[in-house]
Amino acid sequence: MRLLYSLGIHLYGLLLRLIAPFHPKAKLWVNGRRDWYARMSQTVETGQNHIWFHFASLGEFEQGRAVLEGVKKDFPLKKIVITFYSPSGYEVRKNTNLADYVFYLPEDTAKNAKQFIDLIHPEFVVFTKYEYWYYYFSELKSRNIPLFMISAIFRPNQIFFQPYGGFFREILTSVTYFFLQNEESVHLLKEHGFRNVGLTGDTRFDRVVELPKQQKSITEVNQFVGTSPVLVAGSTWLEDEKLLKDLMLQFPDWKLILAPHEIHEAHIEAILLLFPDALRFSNFAQHTFQKIVDARVLIIDNMGMLSSLYGYGKISYIGGGFGVGIHNTLEAATYGIPVIFGPKYHKFQEAKDLIEQGAGFSIQDAEKLHDVFVCLQEEIKRDYAGKQAKCYVQQHAGATAIIMKYLRTKKLLT
Image (cartoon, rainbow, N blue to C red; front, side, top):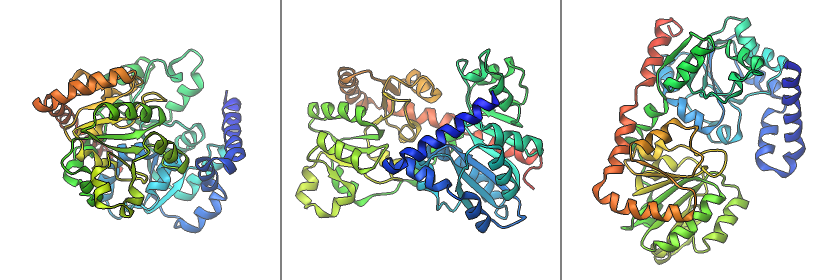
């Protein structure tokens, strides 16, 4: 199985190198790892110990950010290395002031794992939610370097728990401690012989609960919104955007702030075919005051604004539910607004919880979206759904404090 795993890693990297000339994201992935050892060894201070945080992408960075901030605040002299797997995380946060170094994680091979860990000398390592890399984890275990999974979540249908999943269960044995999101994950790991587990919840709550206090007032958005009710659609894909087009035709009094998940030019052009009269945030200054007032759709064609944009909304729509799964619902819920998303939400505990609380609403098609939107306009007057959303976020904060206490108790942070 290890041979097949290594072959899979190699073939995936080869595929990305083949398509890189034609695929911007693949190109970033490939270029970010080219000559990685030479570039890192020229940058990283030789012989210096570090704390290593790894995030798959931007969402996981925001999820683990509260713990990262806690370490940075309480132990400012510690050197921190951040790695990302995906360009969507690295390209947005490569200049964060929360770390001394930010890199792409080299491909998971035995050689890369040894060289990388030799280079950064981690005192301990924190991975957020998922990504279980065999060679990195094995190398850390062989050196007795503590490895922690925070906000981890498991489901019975994952490969770890299948009869043929022994190789992948072996990867889990390299983890020093699992800080888990829910009881199901705790029971599942314990059923398979793991005792190094604890229910702490999701560290995202500690991050998002602070967002309304940190919301930035955006002049262009203020001008666009005016006094109109606003639907904020975040992390959308084309299938989401097609539904939103129909919705906006049916509710002419509403305005739409659309922040797509992918902001490359081809996707923006596809959105403009759906909304020909939409304004692009990057071109905002070119428009007259009257055009801004009359416009009904504003396309956010940059990264990093979404967590503030939800504060302008009466209702939110979270994309991804017609693809691999919905994106972050909590950034919207923390502002006390109802959350709508597509049918593929079952892997996300917070989405299921929001539905149970009467604050989240799953839709399967344009007709269901219309019906939910009609109901929510009445709901806004009572503000029940919005209050439930905000209360849910506030009640689930606190995971970071538990994790930080553990790190101090084990004297990992001194």
